[in-house]
Image 1 (tube, helix red, strand yellow):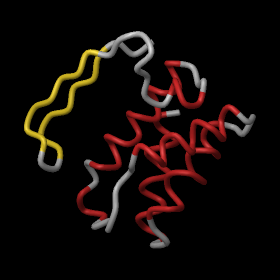
Image 2 (tube, helix red, strand yellow; image 1 turned 180 degrees about the vertical axis):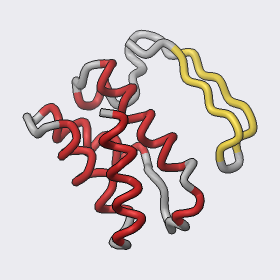
Image 3 (cartoon, rainbow, N blue to C red; image 1 turned 45 degrees about the horizontal axis):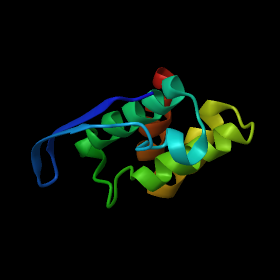
Image 4 (spheres, helix red, strand yellow; image 1 turned 90 degrees about the horizontal axis):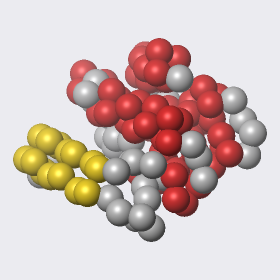
Length: 108
């Protein structure tokens, strides 16, 4: 189980630490996905958010991560689920999509 969450220098958040307790779960609680896979999805989100040169209008939201986790729980291969739930909703630009897919391939 994920026990803590730290966010630094993201949007308006300079430094935030949250200790998670039993009953307070992100992604895993709503979807039942394994912790390792949840961490991988969060890692994808961090890496895509760092790709500022893509000039995405929106970035990876918690909702997109949860959608990907639900697809994985439903039996889709993790890379395919992440592509469908994370990469494709963010952009239709071929170069940006290729960059996000590469992040997914390297992470999962």
